[in-house]
Image (tube, rainbow, N blue to C red):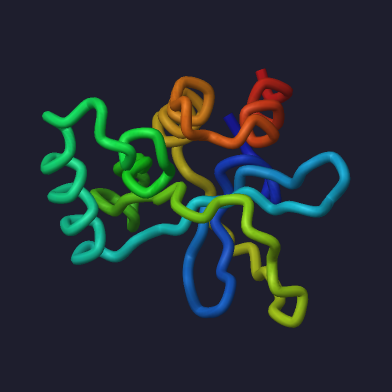
Length: 133
């Protein structure tokens, strides 16, 4: 399956950080993207997630703080895409630079599943993903 840049699952650079593009709200006010973490931050996120795994009623379980997907795409394998702060308003002074890279099918499907099933996800992001089906 070929995916065009600027569509769900394409990778872009913003403020010297790498992100996975999910989409814009219909009014164009919010950009949804997941930050691609480096190996060290991925390990820290995984450790924090394991720490709270046995605490189902902890408030952090219903926030985006520990919501992530571990990628399997070449060059990104083993790194997390974090949903923390997805939907923040972008700083229009900085340009979004789409790279010639798109996540593989497995990663895109894992992201869609997480977005649709996690109760902490913004409803407007879930609506974007539902339209992709």
